[in-house]
Amino acid sequence: MPAIASHSVFLDLTPQAAWTKLRDLSLAPHYVPGLTGCQFHPGPTEGLGASRRVLRKGGQYLDESVMQWQEGTGFVLLLHKGSNGSPFPFREASFSYALQAEGIATRITLQMHYSLRGGRLAEWLLAKAFNKVVQQIAENLKAFYETGRTQNADMAVSTSNINVA
Image 1: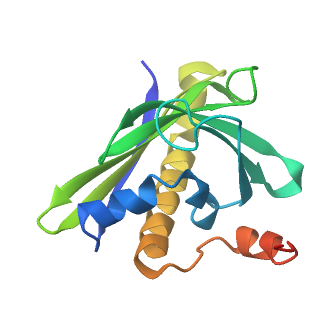
Image 2: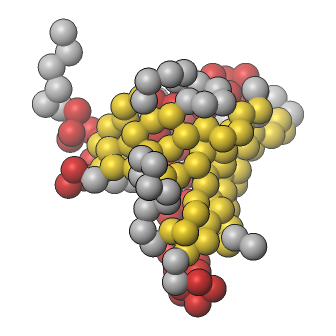
């Protein structure tokens, strides 16, 4: 059974407004720490089968492919590196986003399901760190969705040199 890191935050947005932002898979670098950009793989850019490469500092990257899509409420991304499976230290990993209406506002729950190559001991040792990462992503997402301001200094720096034609 995989380990789970989870965090939930209240969004001061209607469920429809939250879904409009969440379904845009290009927005992750605005709230995920350490990301510097995002590129879509050929094919759909939303829905089942959509796949993106998120770019990280130092030329690192991670591929994320939609493996479940619930229109209006959320999705699950499989984390992998090309066709090589999950990146080290993961044996397998996925990340889910789920919206739930709370009156006229919305709650979002982020979860990372994972198993590590080091087994249960490694999972136990790293659980606190993974929970902290998921919490930070959720809090950054909330701030970005509600204000429109990028919460990721790495992304802001990396895009300042891009020329838009």
